Image (cartoon, rainbow, N blue to C red):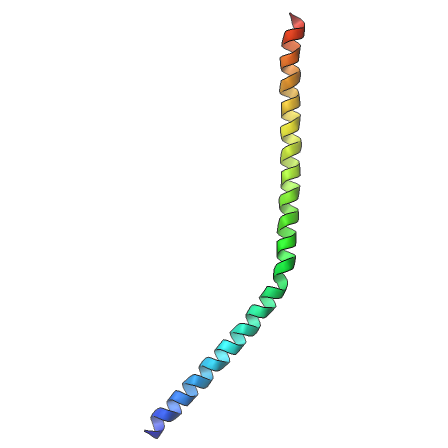
Length: 73
């Protein structure tokens, strides 16, 4: 009976240590999250700006091509 109590106590202590260290690790990862989110948003903004610049350039070229067809006649 004493052996069982001892094993249960050791198991509970081991689980408590694992939970505590897991929480500490999660808190340090959470501290990095705002920087990661900011970097992600900045990257998405730059991608969007590049896409919009290309799209507007393509639209302008198509518009000029269409206008030139009407001006030639």
